[in-house]
Each structure stands twice: as structure tokens, then as C-alpha cells.
Length: 360
Image (tube, rainbow, N blue to C red):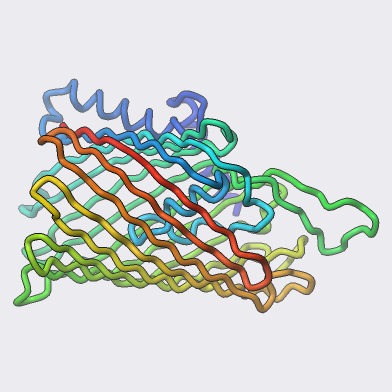
């Protein structure tokens, strides 16, 4: 655990020295600075730089991040959301993003390397501002098999004010409510295989390992998790693209064996997703997705409200993307999610957005 704390401290010190002081903008600024250096150096010719900004309306600022990352290529289990954290009001959220990508040959095989910085800046609920930084790579092992690697770092994500429930609660005292924050690191990898005889069908075997580290007084929630899964991507026609995915994940909280709180967020998770893309015209595309998640809580702590309970999450999204020219693309979309723990009332979240992307 101490090694994890030291790693997290060094990461945060680096990002804060190179950033703006705002956790939402720091990863974006780091990526932007790297991009400027690449573009200014002739030795880095060939890097592709993409910048984007989306503007969202959300009806619940506290649920926004978990809803946005519920997809097969993001972080669908991020993180446990207690009902006390929800219903924080609507907001307008800005999402600046910078993505740098380089294609080159490694050992005679095509290889791609990318760096992505992303921020979410809330207009009213600024305490929820946060960002992330990720590094991705793909390498063709053969003409039909590729190795995929990704590292993700998301520091200081504020979840809200949550209740601290000690094992031995004092009668007559009001519940303690503290700020809950966490930092996520995960490492993901996969093998992508073109199916023989079907040029437009690809099977991906996927796995990841990650850490979620909570600030005091919620360190009992510090979690190690691992994921295995498979994705299928298929383009049956020139206009249609389909994708299916399934993940199984297991998460183990550090405080499950020597608890100080009535709180163990250890879980097993099933995640199923389907995606559909259709080229309406040469410039206009429709994208749709449907996602389902089941969390089974495995706590054995007496008094823990999750003991013997579970959670269901279902989410749908739709977006239109219009390519104005080779440089500019504009987007409009919406998504709606519903999450329900078996011992709580359901939580709903609606997000709509407009955005633009520039590629150089």
C-alpha cells in the first residue's frame, strides 16, 4: 500500500508542477505542451495532432463522469456511486481534449503510439473538475494480429460528500460526512485478431489491472481490480459498423479483512455493450450504443448496507458526427443512464452535448 501511495504522490507532484493548478486542465495542458514540442521539432515530423472541445449539459453533476466513461474503451466500473452523492444539480461542462499520435515501423511492423489528455471543467460545481492522461500503443505482430497496450491515470476525482460509518458507531451522534476523492491507475492490454476469410471482422481479447486509491477517511475503499473480456468488431458493409463487448471484473477492497468502517466495496462485475455506426451520407454518421452493467457486492461486514446486495446499470447513447472538411468535424449527441442498487432508489442521468474536433 505504501508503494502505491508513493507512486500516486510522485504522479501528482509532476502534474501539478507542469499544469495550471486545476486538476481538470492539467492532463490537457501536459498533452498540449508535448504537442507543441513535437510540432516545433523537425525530428518529430509525422505526428498527428487532434484537438477537441465538447460542451455538455448534465442534469446531475455528480453522476456525469461515471456516465461518460461507461463504455468498452473507457472505464465502465469507475467508481462506486452511493446515492448520497447524487442529485447535486444540473451544470454545463466543458471537455477540452488533446490527442497526439505517431505511426512508424518497429521491427519491420506497423506501430502506433498515442498520448491523450482530457479535462472536464464544470461551470457551477467546480469541485467536480477533473482530468486524465493516457498513453496508448498498438503493434502489428503479423499482418492479421496486433498487440494493444494502454495506461490510464486519473488523479483527484471528487465524488462528493459521503457518510463515514465506523464499525462502532456512537449513539446519539450525527453521521460524519466527509469529502470523497480517488485516484485511478490502470494498465490494459489486448490481442486483436483478424478472422481468417472475413477481412472486416476482428476479435479482441482484452485484459486490465488497476488501482483505485481513496483519500482519507475512505482509505478502506482502496481497491485492486482486474478485468478480462472480449470485443468483436465487424463492418458488414461499407456503411455499417458493429461492435459487441463483454467484460468480467473482480475488485477487492483493502479494508475487507481488517475493517474500521461498515463499508466494503469489493465486487464482481459483468459488463455487456453493443455499438452501431451508420454512414448516412459521405459526411454524416450516426453512432448508437447500449450498455448494461451488473455489480454484485461481496462484503461480509455486519452492518454494511451492501451485504447480499447488487446494482444494475443500463445506459443508451446516440450521436451524429458531421465531417465539414479534412480538418474539422462537429458532433451532437445525448445519453441517458439509469442505475439502481437493490437497497436504494434508482438514479438517473441525462447528458446532451455539442462539440468540434480539429485534426492536423
